[in-house]
Length: 257
Image 1 (tube, rainbow, N blue to C red):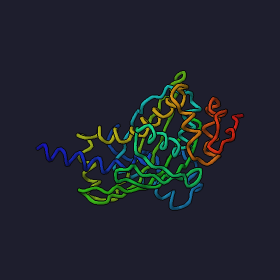
Image 2 (image 1 turned 90 degrees about the vertical axis):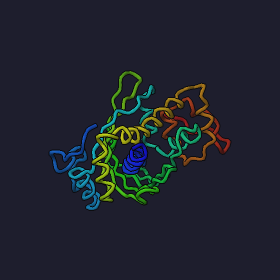
Image 3 (image 1 turned 120 degrees about the horizontal axis):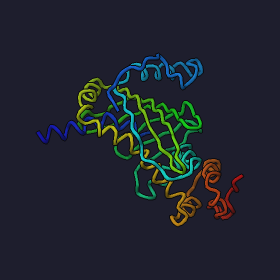
Image 4 (image 1 turned 30 degrees about the vertical axis):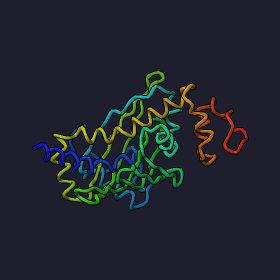
């Protein structure tokens, strides 16, 4: 029995780990298209088709309240907008092993260091909401390579200097066996999916809190980290206290407006 339980946990984790490249049972929303994205025609046909499938026929849907972060709102958003900086800081702090590469302002390549990799694309940025479409795969010893996609909606609320994130993910797993197992196991092992989904939010919270801690050494780390100037500037705008630190080239960093 313990062996069966162990295998069940690993199967569900394999089905949900795709979302880190990023409550309730699955079910189709009432609308055929997420109105929060605006017009369907505003996106390329292949993107619209993927979003529509995820929205109407998800393998599973999860909503998770992420770890709160005691930081100013603009600091939190700056790290959301530069996930490769967040991932690099997390590796430095030994919080996670994520690897993220920015392909442009809206597309990222990511891997979790544990068999999962994929591409994520930001579809919409609102002041308090981020909508991301991701496609990836996970390779494990039980089911081999499992591919899938996810539509992730991150909503942000604030209370003073505390940011409270809530994440909803619509997941489609291509492998029929893995999809069936995920549906069957979610009532018993849904906490595994929630933990996987919440991992990225936990890391973001811990990195942002390190960044605003003046005694934590974040500014020194940032000054020595090889980053494109435009990406570094996004962080410096939110953290003007770091803008006077020496840059890696020996000159002074960009001053915040």
